[in-house]
Image (cartoon, rainbow, N blue to C red; front, side):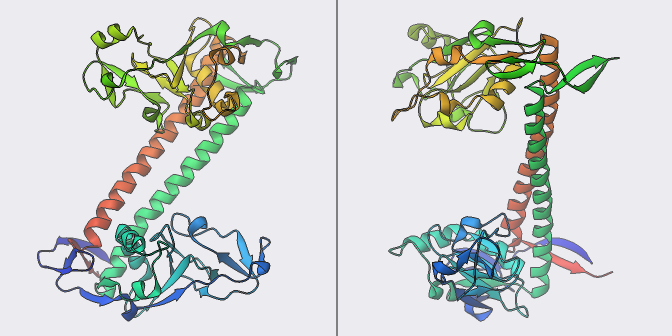
Length: 433
């Protein structure tokens, strides 16, 4: 079978949803092609976590990317979803969908949509419901408890392409989803590899040396006892202030904020909300004239920055500034002495070993003192070994970044296909050879 695409030119409107679909697609009520089973929770005394009875889902808490991962079971199921039923959240948050991978019990937070196989394909409608999630959410907000009813679902107008076209669309989207899932699995494996390497390399349990121009790993056998635990005999323990300078950001008046002029990024905590460990810019920029008036400092590239005030300290968002810039007073910075310590090594040490939340004062507004940071004890290998450790971990980071970019691209491709195929803007024609 070969799939060909072509652009549709003739449309009609599903007035309820405000979307257009091809003229030759039927528009029907969901009840005409599916059975709706509203969930009902069994008595809590029948629940268990050791696998007796049917898997049980109360709501969407255990929803996964496509399939749920139940953690509870019940010996007295009341409402049951069958394999390939579409599971939909009917209580706030409304509209999220998954597919039942096997027979399971559903509680009051869910409904099961059982598509008539002679008229519809469950995967097509799984994706179709994703496209109307915002509409379902708005429908749910119209009720007292932010919920949608069986009647709401039964009377929902849906598009009905030919079964052949439904299957072709579902195959395209599920193929992309499989690629996304495989990429996510690779990301998780790489993250696990990185975590294991950090634990071994940053404690000296596994060492790296250079032989004939190549890095060689070996297991350390000679250790010394220190105040931070066992480390290799040729390592030393130093305080952070002995190998770096700890700095703080500035409180900028509101009149200077929100500007988009100037060459220096003015970094706020929100600018740290991304995967990459590097910061190349910010939402706001500031010019030298304003900086002089404020007597604010410009910090060099390779400064390690992280939140030091507020709830954000519990998120452990360590980043490395890769351009000259400044930051607000909710952020602290570490300017390393490159003669003594590798920037990347120090970054990985903090990422692996220093929980900012535990350093913060226990008040309504958590904050970390400069003196607390300065006195953090750091295990320090010889500088060349630091660089080799950092190089290994950077290689893993690069692989992870490539995988994340691949996943982002696949998600964009999927979104485009969903927008085009599920509305019939781009049609699918199947050919047999």
